[in-house]
Length: 427
Image 1 (cartoon, rainbow, N blue to C red):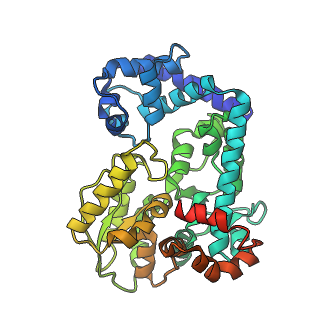
Image 2 (image 1 turned 90 degrees about the horizontal axis):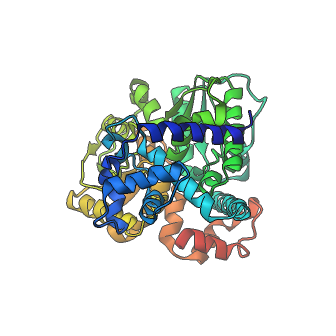
Image 3 (image 1 turned 135 degrees about the vertical axis):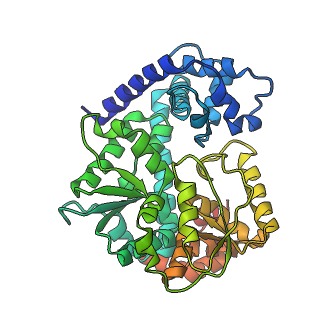
């Protein structure tokens, strides 16, 4: 069965189950933190939830039900609130797709999908070209079919982490020191397909995700270790879209879970204390990650983990938090709480959050580092965070002066891409 057909069949099967199980009690709507930002004052939770069920069943689309589907930020708070055997986050994702597909022509969907993917590819290539030797970039992103018949694990780092390569290199350095037998897979050539799917191009997204899964399986791994929360979500909640219900796939394990499982081995690598008060920037939505990161950082010698008040129920990561006002609220609460607690630094979990927040360091007076950089300090290595450095410069002349040689080595004319880099770094 082709991946595209798998997606449609899987989605319709899930819709049938959800529609049967959902009692439209409205508990998911009541729990949703995004409704406060999206003009739902006075809305009846049962009516809105019924409207969403109607959408996925292909029936009438009420404006408030469509609006709620469009404001879902996948925090997963609704999952715990549901008293039935329903995943409201999944239900809302189908409702969003159904609403999009009735409002936009097929040709427009495909064009938007292509444009989004091309923009992502250019952005990743440019920011990687600022920071990575071309040989390293090629080794990370080239398909390695046939290089190895077996690896204990595949480290699937996704696409966007290449915009913050110091995080990716830190992960690999830790794996190497732990003696993990692994292969890497990532970059836009190994995408999970979520960009296409979010645009409504189910066929393109499903085919892309299936090709990536086939690559992972070619190494016969015991597990696939992920970093990106979106990739983890796609390959756990929607694995049947890519593999088919009767095919076996390796388990997808988030890196934080892997490190917790290997905590005793990780402890043996620590060579120096990290004498800092640290608060973690948290998001829900990916099972266990919040507790995992706390456990990992508490194991670092000298580090004091400080709990702060924050809006961790707002989305599953910062970059996809698009509801007006919500992202600003997250930032203001995070930095105000960190300052009040007198922490030395805020530790980000995901690369996307780090990319969004690191430039705030200059004006907020609180250092922002990824948790993998902190582990690196304890283990005895440190990769420069050029993404943050260049963002803090706020001066393209300085960026190009320092990175022109590397950009040229990666095939870019520094002056020709000035405007594109300006937009990527400072917009």
